[in-house]
Length: 293
Image 1 (cartoon, one colour):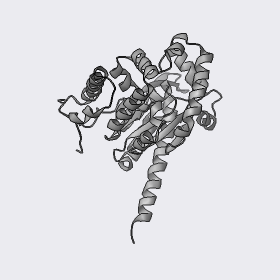
Image 2 (image 1 turned 45 degrees about the vertical axis):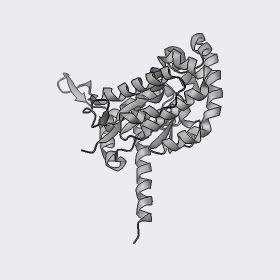
Image 3 (image 1 turned 180 degrees about the horizontal axis):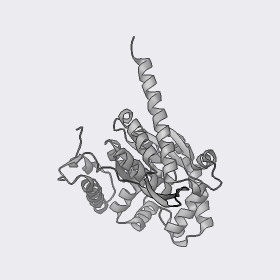
Image 4 (image 1 turned 45 degrees about the horizontal axis):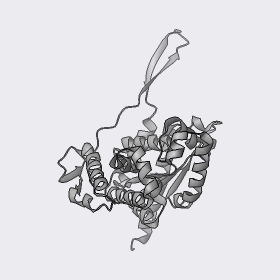
């Protein structure tokens, strides 16, 4: 079995601005990985994740001949499991980075992808928030020392990009400078393009994004939407550098849904798999073309 070893000493290079934050970050980041490995902190080893979960559901149908109701077990994720199996060999453990506006759709997608591919799942913003002492503390840090906050995001990406077999929900900082964009090249980056009104609705309902303290407490939909619009304008060029794009609006149209809320996590996951399949196929063609006769 191929194993990836991460030395604990490599985490001591994080350029965070206060000793307290530095120690918290190390402790939090180390704990996050150790939780997935259950090995001593001196030598953290990532091995194969637990077996995939089953997504079975029940459905009923009527037999006209007997008018009796029968129950059959149907696995709605069987196509996803097959597609995951088909692309796993070509992926060869390459990590997947999901970029785009932070929202629950992207998070749910990341977790399902990791489960199907038997990868590990990380949320880079969550790691920074844990290190800062929680989401409120992270917002305070972001407002008081934006440069330091962005540098901590870069270090998280640096650590994660050095590993394999990960699905990473990357924060906004992942596309804000050339260094971070280069780190995303260690894997496959996919822009999950969710309409801003859907993102705003989720934030107002769940209060689950690193916004400014004023917006986070007011919770006004119009304020959140306005903030997201400005943020999107700043980040869209970075998002567009991703290897592939999955648009929720476009996917809803392709599937014949009138309401974009009808697009399920499974629908998005299948589209992501198709994009990964396309990218790996192109890579194989390029490798074949470069091979000498």
